[in-house]
Amino acid sequence: METVNRLKVGFDRDMTMLTGSMFTRRIVMGFLQVVRAIYFALLGFSPVEIGLLLSIATFLSAIHHITFGYLCDRYGRKPFLILGTFFAASRTALFAVSTDFWVLALAQSLGAMGEGVGAGQPVVSGYITDKVEAHHRPNIYSTMAITNSIASTIGLSFGGLPILLENRFAYDVVSAHQLLWWVCTAVNLISLVFLFPIHEAERVSRGDMTKKKGSGIKNWGVIAKFSITRSTSGLGWGMVDSLMTLYFFERFMVSTDILGPIYAFARFLSIFTYLVTPRVVERYGPIQTIVTTRLISAGVTVLFALSSWYPMAVALMVLNRIVVLFTMPIRQTFASGMVSPEETATAIGISNSARMGVRTIAPTLAGYMFESISLTLPFYTGAVLMAINGGLFWAFFRPREPELSPNT
Image (tube, rainbow, N blue to C red; front, side):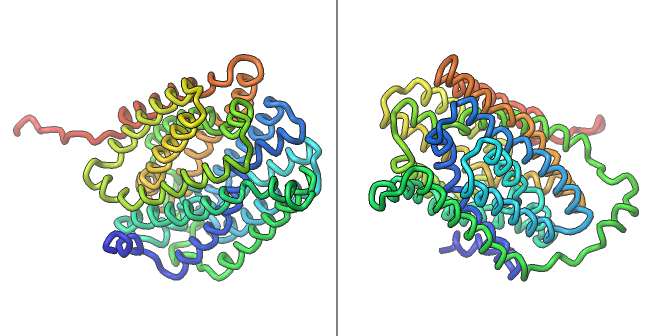
């Protein structure tokens, strides 16, 4: 009970409404995560074509992060939260009306411009920084990680609905999915109910602030290091995760009706890890915790690639997702405090763009490896990059011992 009460600290009406909006949108993202790649495969697209569809979204997401981050620092957070919701709804609406490759590519492009499903996104992080004192932010990020995990669990657990519609109600593959894409569109739009009432934080006008600050961003060195570090995790996790459902579909012949509950179970278990995240960070520090989990993730990924036994592969996949998700609120808290508040969204936007920019190639590269080389090569590649990411976190951001003066 003490832990639960602690996680409520820092929430006012606006933060609660923002969390509700993210919760609603995250349900759709959970469904997309388990269904999308397999749906594209069922439409007849090759692994390379599927990778291209996912890469398009990743590339546009990189542009979105840096533009939305910069613009919301200048003009406010709320308009871009609302705009992002409309972009997200447009993706699933286009999925519902067409199976043409280029229409699906357009849908992926628009959906990538969506904002507001994660506390680590630049606009959301900027809003949290505006509204919440620094010492309360770890609780905010941990609580939002929990609520997002619950929402993702719900969305992932719906992954078997297309097959249910096909088997029980005589829908074909396309019509079963398209009905659910319309439902996803409606759910995305419902999240606007939570966004319209929220207020911008009362602070100095961003335009005035820019004039007073003169040169704008002051911490380019820190931002550059963080961007380089995040780019390795973006490419590494992109290689591991972007075609994971397709990997299970191709290697073990399991579809969304099986994978949905498995993914939901993994996401549900992550909720309990977030309850102890603040205490772990207090004891070991954010950087040491991130580095350790990155190395564990790299090792588990190698074991996953080596496993040809389906139950073991499932267990290792679940473990790896829990390990990676555990560090999410830790990294978000670190990112929100590495620069001054008026630079937060821009800094996170730049680092997210670096991460998503290099991650753009991951789905297509993994698809090529699946089709032409080996189903497991993307996982070995991702493991190496995750280990490098841990090394960069340690090299750039590890706690430094205070330098002693010569007279000490």
